[in-house]
Image 1 (tube, rainbow, N blue to C red):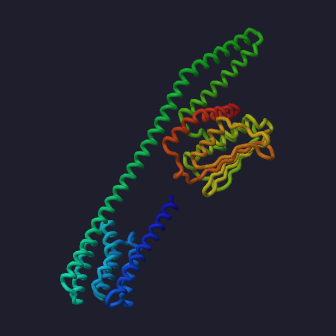
Image 2 (image 1 turned 90 degrees about the vertical axis):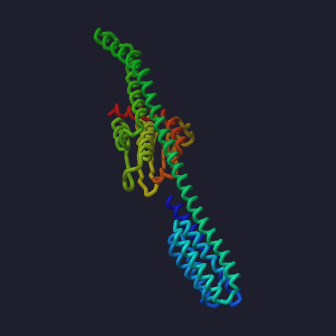
Image 3 (image 1 turned 45 degrees about the vertical axis):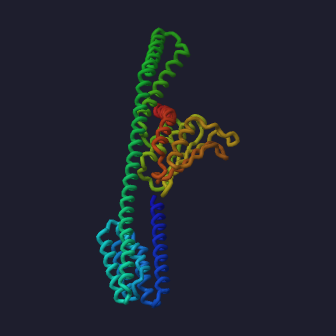
Length: 409
C-alpha cells in the first residue's frame, strides 16, 4: 500500500514538472518571438513563474503568489503579452481547486489590472488592450469555474469511495455473522440429533459390560469395541462442536507439540527470528497448519518417526514447516485429502504459498510461507464466506485429531 502511494506521488510530481516545463517553453518562445525581443530578465521572470507550478499541490497559495508576481513583472517589463498569462491561469485553476477561491480571484484581478496598465503605458490602442483584457478575464473565469468543479468532483469521488468501503465492510460483517449463525445452527443440530443417540449407545454398552463383569461372564469383543467406538465418537463430536462454536485456536503451536509428545510422538519445536504477536488470521493459519501437520504425521508417518516443527518469524514472511522422517515415498505422491486441501485454501486466501509432499530423503514435508502484510490481499467477503464453508469439515477433522492428542495427555 505504501509503495503504491509513493509511486502515485512520484507520477503526480513528474506530471506537474512536465506541465511547468511545457508552460515555460511556450511562454519563453512567445516572448522571444515578440516585436521587442526578449533579454535575460524576460526569460528569468518567465521561467521562475512557470517552474513554480511544479509544486502547486504542496503550496498552491505560494505558487499562485510567485507565478502572478513573476509573470506580472514580465508583462510590465517586456510589454503586455497575452501568452504570459498562461502560467497565471494554471495557478488560478490549481488554487481554486485547493479551495482558495478568494486568493485566486484577487490574483486574477491584479494581473488583469497590471496587464491593462502595461498596455496603455506601451502606447497600444485602448480598444486592443481592453479586448485582450476581456479575453484574459474569460480565461481566468474559466480557470476559477473549472477549479471549483474539479474540487467538487474530487470530493464526490472521496465520498463515493468512503460509501463503497463502508458498504464492503458492512457486507463482510454480514457474511461473517451469517457464517457464525450457520455454524451455531449446525452445532445445535448435531448436539440434538447425534449427541443423545451416541450417549445412549455408550451408556447401554457400559451397562452391558458392567453387568457381564459383575456376573463373571466373558465380555464379547464386539461389546468392548462398541463401548470404545462410542467413547471415541463422543470425544470427536465434542471437538467438532467446539470448532463449530468458535474458530479461535484452542491453544498455541507449543501446546500442540506438547500434546503430540504426550501422545507418544517424537516432536521437536524450533522457533527462529523474533517471536511476536500476529494478526488473528495469521495466528489461526499457523495454528491450523501445525495441527494438520501433526495429525498427518500421527496417522501416516509411523510410530517411530521423528517430527520437526519449525516457525520462522521473518521481517515480511512467516514460515511454518512440519517435516517427518516417516514412510512416505517420493516416488508415489499422495492424493490430497480434505485436510491438505482446506489448509491450502486457507494459506492461499492470505496471499501465501504452501508446499506439501514427500521428501526426497524420505518422510513428508508441509511448508507454508505467509506474508505478514496481507491486508491488500484479504479476500472479498464472498470469498471469505465460501472459504469458511469449505473449511468447516476440515476444522472439525483437525480438532478431532487434537482431541486424540489431548486424550493421550
